[in-house]
Structure formats: C-alpha cells, structure tokens
Amino acid sequence: MSGGDVVTWAGRLNGLQQYSSAVLTPDTATGGLTYRQLLDGCGIHGCKNAFCAGHSITADNEVLIFGGHADKVQWFRRYNHATGNLTAVELMPSGRWYPTPVTLHDGRVVVVGGIIDSGQAGWHAEGNYTADNPTYTVYNPAGAGGKGTFTEDKMDMYEQLHEAFPIHTYPHVVLLPDGGLAMSAGKTLVKYDQTGEESFARAYPMEDRPGPPWSYPQTGQGTPLPIEPPYDRIWFLASGGNADDRARVTTPASDTAHLIELTGGPSASWEDVGPMPYERVMGDAIVLCDGTIGYFGGAGQGIAGWNLKEGETQTFEFRDGTVWECPEKCSKAFDWRLEPTIYDPTTGRWSAQGSLAKSVRPRLYHSITMLMHDCRVLTSGSDVSWDFTAEFYSPPYLSAGPRPAITAATPTRLLPGQPITVSYTTTDPVTRALLIRNAANTHSMSFDARALWLNVTSNAGGQLTLATPASGSVLPPGPYMLVLNTDEGVPSNAQTLTVLPSSAP
Ligand SMILES: [Cu+2]
Image (tube, rainbow, N blue to C red; front, side, top):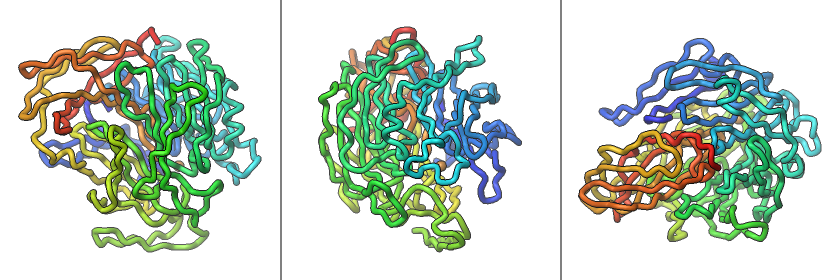
C-alpha cells in the first residue's frame, strides 16, 4: 500500500479465521514486520471468501477485490486503508474465479475472465465451457457518486478467451500507451483498442508465445520490463511455466524466457532470451529497485493446486531443519526453487546458479512476493505446508556500495506530466530514477505491475528534477515507489508517491 504497509488476507486454513485479514507494517528498528488484525470478524473479505480473487490498489489507497472462491465467486469488496473501513461488499454482474484486473488512466478497472462457477467439478476439463466466464466488466470507482459501478459483462474478448480455454485464467493484461490492452491467455496474445470509456474492441492477434500455454494453472512468470522515455514502447517478459500442454504432478517446469514488444504491432515476434538458470513454475517475476527482474519461489516440477493424492501425506523438511508432516491437501510441486534468479534487461544476462542466497521455506502455490519500500523483497505463504511464515530477501544491490537517501520528494500526489522535485543525500553520484507501481500479488501474478525510468532534467546540489510521462495510460493512477539509483546501481529507499486519475488517456 501507499506508505509501505502490506495488507494481507487468508483463506480458511490452519486454525486461522476463515476471513482473517491483517496489516503488516515494516518495523525499521528490527527490520521485521509488526502484525495487526484488520476488521475483526469479517475482515476485508466482508465475510465473502476472497480466495483466488483478483486485486488492485487505487490512488485513494483502497484495495479492490474482484471475485472469490466456492459460492463467493461473484462478490466484490472495496477496502479503504486510509480510513480502515470496508466501503462496499456487493455482487459483480457474474462470477469470476482467477480473474485479472487492470487499472486504466482514469481509475476505472477492467476485470477480465475467470471461471464463473468454482464449485463445478472438473472445471478445467477440455470443452467444459459451462464453467467459463469469457467476458470482461469495467468497474468505475467514481461511479454513482463515488459508490462505484460495474458495467454489464462484455463479449469483446470472447474469441481469445474461448480459444485459450481451459488454460486461460489469470491472463496477463498490460495497459498500452494508446489506451488499449495487450492480453496473453493460454499461449495466445491479442491487442485490443479502447473504443470508449468502458469498451474495447479486438484489434489484431499477435504471435503466440512459443511453447505450451502458460496461464494459470500452468503458471509461468510474466512482467513488463521497466518502460523508458519516450514511453512509446513496452516490452513484456514471459518465462517458465509447465513444459507440457496439459501438466500434471509429474510435469517438469520450463526454463524458457521470451520477450515481445507489446507496442510492436501485428508483426511483433517473441525473441528468445533464455534459457533461465532454473526451470521454474509458480514463481514470481517482479521488478527490483535497480530495474532488474527478480524471480522468486516456485518449483522445478509440478502443477498449481493441492491434494497430491487422496489420503496421501507428505513430509517436508525445510532448510532450517524444521519438519512439517502435511496431513492432507499436500502440494503438487517438487524440486523447490529456493534460490532466486535475477535477469538484467540492459545486458540480457541471468544470474548464475549458486550465485544468490536461498530462502529457508519453499514458496509454492498461494505464496506471495512483493518489493518493499526498503528495496528488500518479501516472500510469504505457500500451500505446500500451509505456511504462514514470511522471509525477507536482500538483493546484492543492498551491499554493493553506499546507498543514497531521499529526504523529500514533491508533490506527493501528482498528475501524469507533472515534474517531481527530489532532495537527497549521497556518497556516489545519483544518475537514475525509477518509479515502480505498487502491485497486488497472488498466484504468481502482480496485478498492475509497472515500472518507469524517469528523465532527470536537472541534478545539482543534492536536488534533482524528474519529468514524468503526460499519458495516464503510461502512468496509470495508484501508489508508486520512487527510487534513486547511483552510478553503481545502488538504490535508495523508496519514497511513496501517488499518481492521480487523469482525464487524458
Ligand atoms: Cu488459488
């Protein structure tokens, strides 16, 4: 969230309340996290199970939760972290289990796809289209006098979602500079044009991602690379996932990695930038404070989900020597990826096997990975062990030299195009500034993930001025982390900035 809190909520596991939700606040004295229960009783779920939903964060520091689990797939909740109140718990036009939200320039949120009925056995059986929801709806938080409104379900993305079914949930959707969207579902990739404030039209298909379908539950890792001035080109990195078309417990993960320019038109093609040093399924790929991409968690074999085999137990031994006897609903993933991988988009290099520090616990299905304001990485959760632990990872940049410090950045709330003035202290020269949007993370997805390198227009005497892109589709509204980098690539702590909704796309 804006300011550095982590808002979290659980499913019904391990004696925790079904609707338990909490705020984790970084404790600068200890380097750890403090824990505070949020909204006792119903939590920010609003008593409507929000397991396997899609989330986004608004410029007002609200969490929007679209969909849920079991008989709660149709529910929507709006939680305001500034006031601590749940301001809406209401029905969407239809059920969405594993949908993807994406925030537009004016704060509206497109909610794409998902499964309409999570209770249906064999929902992802080939041809079982009755479980599918191949539509999208647009949520307008400002609609109905600020109460919020949904459009009716719309069919413009039906062709792609239907083609990719059943490996099409949690599709990767990226907002483009022209206000359109690029969506990867299964292995298909399609460009959509925005044709109205709340409508899109299929523009053209782009090249399929090479290899098997990589959407959930085949769960590869994807992220847009940091966008550079003049912000007219967006590159997307897609990697890993399962190595077969229809994965099972025994299916290995893939080590493939491909880049495509989403703004490159119908003839853009995937460029092979692999192999990664590890095959990885169910990991996370997130932008780090120096613009590199960090890969965390996941496995070298297996498939999203649990229930290894009915009645089968499993013994897990963690790296700190603790042992967990899993009594039921055990993980379907093996060959844990404890060591992160870092990809540098400027050199095209991957960190070598054995070069980075390992985590203690595996982070598999239903785990999370987030960049913190101090530029460490938080990894937590995992169904492998019904795991409620959390770990911090310190990337090598934190010990690569003296860190600069931001003493002030103004304005703290800005429109796209407004310059930012930053005061800082440093030992080494500060040369670059990265703006990273706070993403909402679950199931290897970081919804609304986006990072932008900013043009430094002046820099003298511990004060610099940064230009920001004028387009709200390049700089969509929400909370961002501003980070300065030295010429050695050492980042400062992040300063919270909020980008406001803009009328101009
Ligand atoms: Cu799930």
